[in-house]
Image (cartoon, rainbow over all chains, first blue to last red; front, side, top):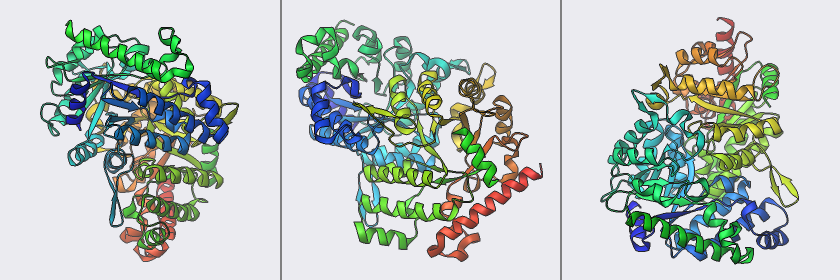
Length: 308
Length: 308
């Protein structure tokens, strides 16, 4: 799947991913009204509003971008109905040829991590039959439990040609609380980065590993160091736009080949119509506002890469 | 909810929790056959087998125990159908008066953690209405992202009188890979433990905090130290039984008041009928085997606490 991701990035010339993290507050009133009229002000109604919102954004951006990253928390908050729409969103994006990165941040031990890996990336056996459940292309994974938690994902990645992005240095202000602790003379995130490189060596694609890393756009200096520590690791970079990262800050996340990183923007694209810059589209044309925001982001990153 | 947990523990005189982590391989053939006959060898059929299995175990153990801990990975592997049965299991256990600890190991940043907290412990607003989605009593949470990831859970805990258990030192063999790294002269798990104590001070019940910790039974020495670092923190102790922990190893996880810890067993109880010791019940009476195993576990821990 790392091959498909790279091929999609080359095709679109856009190392970006749109984060499908729909909060109800982002969804225009007319979309909510239609969903609530049909399903009531219920969890099902909320989920339906999310689905219509996602579909409109995907329909307006899919040809520009290589990948999407639905954040499962935003679906789980609506319970089973939300999870159904997560599934529907994954399926729809894959049909459109997009690579789907399930931002699920799972991680547990042994057979439990194996169950997460099977459910999100792999297959389960039921009697004599085999099924894929959520069937994302990539999943994000939390490394706090160590190799026992990661290895079951590696097994599934090898078998299914899927991938993972392991949290190394997250984009949030307090990410340093534990991740920056100095152990053996080096911050923990570097030790995690080294381990990601080693895990990745067990799952190599042609030039990059199936095992990627998450490093926040908000920490460009750390990104530079981690780029060197993990040369064959694709870096998923959240924190662009709304969280403060800019294209020029991001060049060091990329390798000399112009590959090796993919930059996520969620709010900045899916709720673009609420920003002054794209207000002219109005809430009724929120999909077009998202397209314009995606085009601007792609341009910003392309220019930064050309000027480095 | 920490008050209800303590009250349930006092009532049952059993500081134990049954882990509802149903793998299809644990489920007796007759249960699977019935489910597959009705729903086919499908994800729905698998989920139905899980539900019937859970119900039988709950019906045979609920009066002995204060709490259950469904492991959501085992449900997510069957996709939406599995998640439905997770919900059904949570609801059924709460109706029986059991405290439900959702072993979901979630953790993200800001609004994303807030969505997890809302979905698993709190409420979501849909238009003019308010809903609870999964509505567990406690959830397990991963601390790797720091305070930004934890604070939204604390807000919900205070509002809803719910609780969390934060991963501090997990029970698996490789938990030391990052958790034991020495930072500022002390292992990372101690630093996380200190932070858990501080977070917990913001959410105090009468004698214990709403904010608990996960510390594996397989690390009794570390448990002893963490008990001292976090005196008002309830410790959820996985790893009893199948993972190797014994009652006598666990006494130091408890405070002098006989409270402060709750010991989980999953496989050892739910798949008891497959152990030599309980084979006499046979697969057709697997619920009774689980009851016998729960009684033995309770006795083992009570004796260890009396003899300390």
